[in-house]
Image (tube, rainbow, N blue to C red; front, side, top):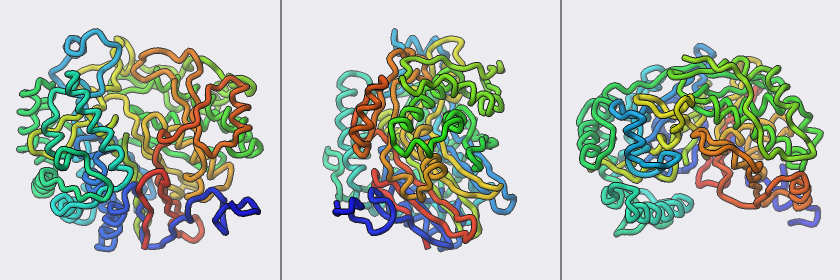
Length: 563
C-alpha cells in the first residue's frame, strides 16, 4: 500500500484488480482463458455471438467439468440487433416420466430432502437441445465448426487451471467417500474419465477426455437428435437400467427447450432483465424492487447501513423464492404484481434499519393455480448473449454413462418433498433452478450482459452488481472486484426448515472491521470467509461510443478478451 492509500494502481479504485478490456468488433468474457479465446476465434471466423457462446460453452464443459457440461442444463438471454428485442431460452430438463413422488420417497427412505448424489436427483440434461435451439434461431456458422475447438481440445488435451484443479481434488475425495457410504451407485466411470493415474489432475497437468470428444463428434454430425434419440440416448438408457436409475430413453426422446419472455423491472432508469421461474432470477428483481426505496448512494458502498439493507432485502425476496418459485407448467404467480413498485414498497416497510430480522414471512403475490459457469459474448453487429450453464452441486451426481465422457447433473435435489408445495416432485416436471443469466437495457437499447454463478449467491450477486454500477458509479470490472456479501440460511426452495435465526451474513475480507462490528450490534451473525461469493463476467456496451467493456472474475481462472 502506498502512503497515499491508493494501493498499487495509478488509476481507478485502489482495490480493483485490473482495467476493463475494451474492444469494438467483439468481446467474450468467460471463466476460462482458453474458452474466451475459442469464442474470439469463432467471431473472427465469421460467427456471431450465439455461435461463439455455444463454442465457448462446449469448451468450458470440457475444461471446467467441476461446474458444467452436457450433462447439465442451460439458460440464456439474447439481444438480437435485427429485431431490437431480448429473447429468453429455458433449456432445463425434466424428471423421469416413470417415477412418481411415492416411488421416489420409497427409494430415498425417510429423509426430508432428495440426496445430492447418485441417481435420485438426476434429471434430463437440457444443454445440447438448448445449443441447437439457439443455433436454429440465431446461429450463422455450421454447428460442426462451433463444436470443433472443444473436440480438438478433448482429443489433444489442455493444461488444467489452478482453481479447477483445486475443486477436482475436492470432488474426487467426496465421490470416493460417498461411494464407500453407499450413496452413489458406481464411480468407476467417473474415475476412468476424470482421473489421471488414479488422481485428480494437478494445476498445469495435461488433461484429455477422448470419450467426450467422441460424444461431441456424434452431436456435431447428427445434431440434437444424436443426443436425445440416437445411440447416446440408448447408451444412457442402458446405463440407468443397470444401476437402478429412473431416466429412460423416452425421457430423452421427448425433451424440449422453451423460448420464454424475459421479465424486467426499472431500477433508477435502468431496465434489469431476468428469466421467470422455474429459475430464481426474479429474486434479484425482488431485491432491487425493495432496495429502490432506500438511498443507497448516501449510505456509502459496503457500509453497515448498505450491507444491512441488502441482507434484509435478500431475506424478504428469498422467502417468496422458497414459497412460490416452481415450474410454471405446474403452478404460476402474478409476476406483474410480485415485481411491482407497490409490492416492493410494502415489503421494504418490513425492514428495521437497526435490527436484523431473525425470521420473515413470505408475501402474498397472488398464487395462480394452474456450482455453475457463466459466460457472455458480443459481436460486431451488436448481438449480445448472456448464457449460464451448470451441473448444479459439485461436478454433479458423480455418475458418468459408459464411454460418454460427461457427468449427469443433480438438479433434481432441488425438488420439494412436501405435497402441495408448487415445487414438489412430480413426473416430467422441471425442478426449481438456481442458474440465471441477466441483462440490462437503458432507453430500450442494450447496456450490459452479465451474470454471477454460484447457487443462491446468484440473485444476491446480481443485485450487488446492479447497485455497484447504478448507485456507486463503478466501471464493469470494479463492480465485480468490490468485496461482496453472501447471506445464507433463508428458507430453502425444498421447504426443508424455515429460517428462524436470521441466518449467517458472510463477508469477504475487504469489508472494514468497524463495519463488521456495527453489523454484529444489529444482530447479524457475521462470518469473514472466502469461496462462496460466486463468479462474475460481464460485457457493457457504451451507449455513446458503442465500445464493448469486458470484465472477468478475479476469484476464478477466467478473463475477458476482445478484438
